[in-house]
Image (cartoon, rainbow, N blue to C red; front, side, top):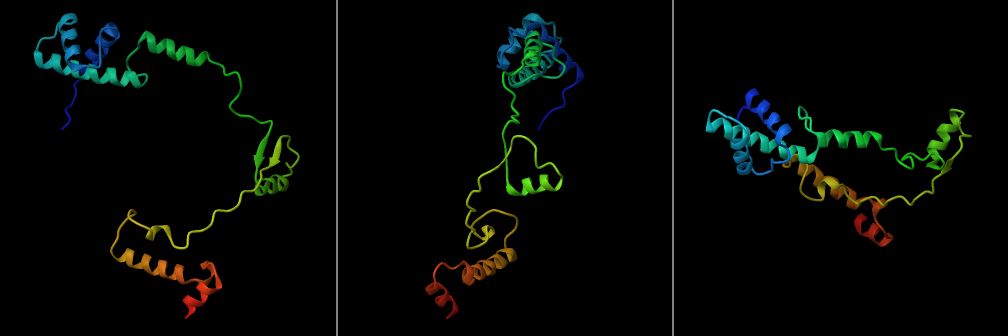
Length: 175
C-alpha cells in the first residue's frame, strides 16, 4: 500500500536533485549514499524516504520535465524546442484530397472553387462479415442471456439468402 509523502520529503528531494543532479542516479541505494554525503538529515528513516522520492523523481525526469524542478538541462531543452522552426510545414494545403461528399458540401456552401482541392480516388468497399462480430468469440460485456441472443442473430445471418454466395446454397437453406 502506498505511503503519504510529506512536504518535507518532497521539498528536500527537489532541492537535492536541483543541486546534485549530476551525481544522482536511478538507483535507490546509490542515491541514499549520496544524500548521506551531501545533506545533514536527522534520521535514517527520513533519509531513506528522501532517497526513495529522489529516485522516483529521477525516473520521471528521464521521461520529461517535472513540475517543481528547474534544471539547467530542462531549461535548455525547452528553449531549444521553442526556437526550432521546421523547414517544411506539417500542414500542406497545395493538394488536399477529399471524397465526393465533401466536394458536394463545399459546392452547397459556395466554396467549390477553392484551390488545391481534388477528388480522392474511391476504394472498393470492404465486404461485410456474414455474421455479427460480437458472436465471433470472447470479449465484450456479459455473457449468459446475451450469448443466446447472439446465437440467434448468427443463425439468422447465415440463413439470409442475400448473404449466401451461390444459388445452390440459397436452395439448401430454403429447403
